[in-house]
Length: 85
Image (cartoon, rainbow, N blue to C red):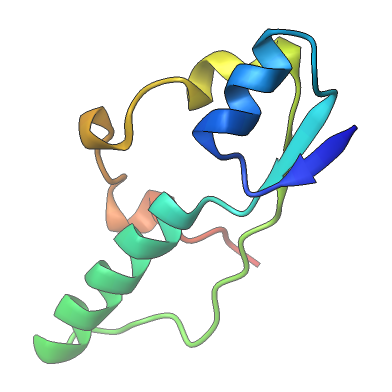
């Protein structure tokens, strides 16, 4: 079984071997980029017109990065947040 959104429940199920994988569109990063873009726009700084966030497939091999609570994560620097085309 696989799922989407990389929820805490999905991470726990993958860890327990009850679920194979979950796709994640990194809502946390999207929130960071949205806030940064709004601040840059208000400050009349250049902003990217488009930002595409590819999905990540979360499996047992890479789930440790998704186990930390959102409250303990920090936003990346603006230039690191938006993938270059």
